[in-house]
Length: 436
Image (cartoon, rainbow, N blue to C red):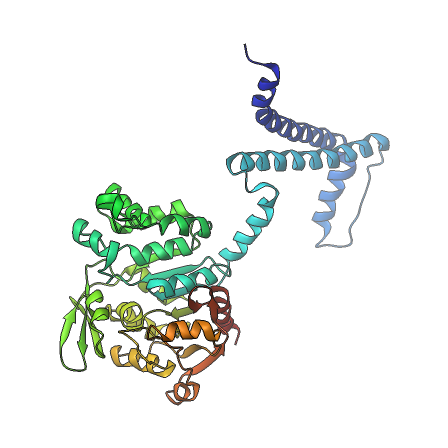
């Protein structure tokens, strides 16, 4: 036999909903009764006033045929009371359902709703890149708008992504995974979960990240449709915006070095430690993602970078049609320059050399403004990077201006165990360009 107190606890949620619904029903009935009682003294004069607004002054006329004024004013009171109770009942019912589905929302439901509405009407932003740089910027942008399209490079051939490309023939998922997590509402918890990497003790799973395996599983469920897998993942993670690869074709990144030698493969390019003359895609005639082109066309703001200039930023720009779409776009177009150099790719590069490198590899002028960091980390952190061959990017502003670009500067760095862009600072400064 069920304990009486236990039964009460089991029925409490349902009882709360029934009480709220009963309040709404009572309110509706009172509203109907009040409307009926006060029809002649409230409703008819109101309708009459509305009909006369175009012809002359308002005329609030009470019929003179023996009206029971007390009855009508009682009806007016019931009408207002009923409307108020109906509102309270419906509001309590909706809130009860929402709290049952998601207890964490609670009384913040209204704030959450209005915040999401505000983000939904934010500017249309496109961000191009890859690696940790793009995902870092997205973390800042999503606090200002949910109209974000992240266009992600797909040339990664190392680590877990490289294994999945070889074993399953899928598009490299690593950079896309990072962007999906960055745009997720539950970013902190999802980052910890999706970045979990299996160790050697995990057997065949060794080296894989959980997020990559999650996308691989969705690709299987979508019968090999990588694009559909991204859409499913976006819904599961409830991301603010969308993530699209720059191309759905299988492409590799190749480099020509200053000594004339060539190598194909993103990992091999970085490991070569040679000075790069230019990079290109193989095959060169891959098709751009239609959603990427459409997003660029309709954008208010386009952010290129930050990220490894040769392996994260430029590969997107080499996909046929992307650079041309950027050139033709009327959006504010900004290159977010790196804050640190990268060994084997941008050794000792200044800010202007990052810009010049993009110009040498892309035929068209694709941005008008450059976002440059002018802050420096603490000496201990700077020394730590110097010991590994990395230094702060020199903000040679005058040279960039001499190249015909507008320069916007600021303190953009975030220091933890690494020196990188601060998401909130970079996102706010980039979006601030729309008001200049």
